[in-house]
Length: 281
Image (cartoon, rainbow, N blue to C red; front, side):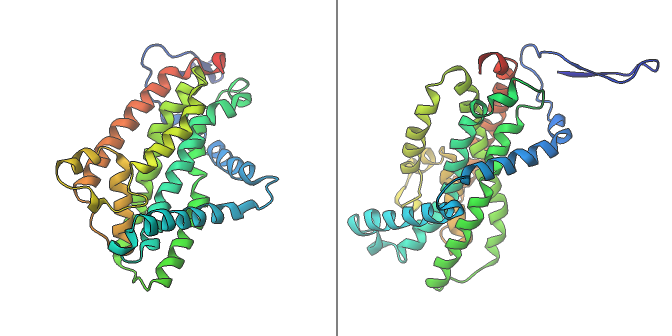
């Protein structure tokens, strides 16, 4: 908690006090430290590819390999290419938002422990660290988007005004990864087992999301339960915006509600645990 003294006879004084109970979110501090947020994002991008043999080419190699694997396993072995026209394009449009989500969630969950040297030495809004780790994934996302554009050109897929929906849909992916990542990042400070659980969580979540298959396979009442996975509506929304797939409909509405619940609860839990980060990290 920050309090500024306003006595006319004394210079402005910045008082830092530990918050008690369920602290207010105090999001105004993020705006005051917006330059720090920018540098944290830039640091994460540079560190990710520093001293890497392929460098930024990893942002191309990873989605391409995943699309090839999906096309072989699901398209050929499970005969999805017989029921879904241009299956590699469907896999590419599913991999695009999922790659952003999985990368952002993995970095966000480990971000606090990885920045322990900053947390223990200087004050700044701790929320800037997980937010920066999420935003840094937009660089890889931009490269993956160009790959999807290449698939669309190859399969002669026309562009429509639905592309404008990619902006709010991308924001939904970022908010989803931040919402879950805040919980995991705060828990990882106290329980280091979380860092071992995250890869399994992401892997299971991928198969529970329509990354390599269409949501048309999920029918009836199961579809509403399936919508509790916030990425289900988002991925279907990407396919609708890019290749004129089925509109996400009720899946997207349920996704929005789930993301808001996870984000608000995650923000308050993060602030609740924030005062112990420096002592436990």
